[in-house]
Image (tube, rainbow, N blue to C red; front, side, top):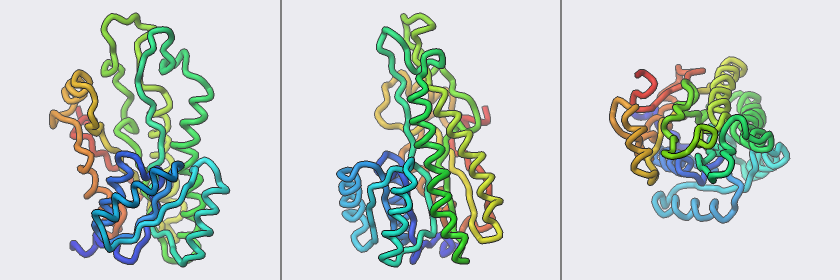
Length: 275
């Protein structure tokens, strides 16, 4: 059975690959033998990520390409460059997203729905949702057309199945209209990704292309103690996730180990969504 997790001879393209979980996804896939193609908007971070990964996986294949997921020309350029070197994309991991930080400047709370700007709405939706659509359109089409099939994995969030609990972000001493909140965009985008997942799962099924989503819960990354305690109290396991705890799920969903799974949203949130 373990052989079904192997991705030896397969190439995986990851968007937004230099972020906290993007690097973890890359390490997970390198562990099972995949060649990894890192894409992101910052060349310096891509080169640093490549060096970091090759330091751990010295005999692996890691390529990097600067790519803005909101620009179809850049996505098509990466596809053409990969074709030139004979690399086929077998797995696409749509990971790129803007995770808006919940802050308050004490004058106007711009995260609140009443004050949230159209500019930020369009920017965040274009990266987190439109970007996943465009990458799926380009790379998914090539998977479907050549008869070899493939896998698309959309990285969603536990906020794809429930609404943000704004009590997590409450600041003592601030009036209601200045309280910071998780912006409307994040949850809407993650819910949208589940809709995209289900659509793609049926669209190319006859061509051997599967699509699933992974919805991680909150990952500990040095957040302040008060926030960590508040969030942990909502999770049956009593803690946030460590950044490496999603690796096995990524390996499962990207490999033949999940060959009969299609159109599903795998929620890994320590049990928060069942309470």
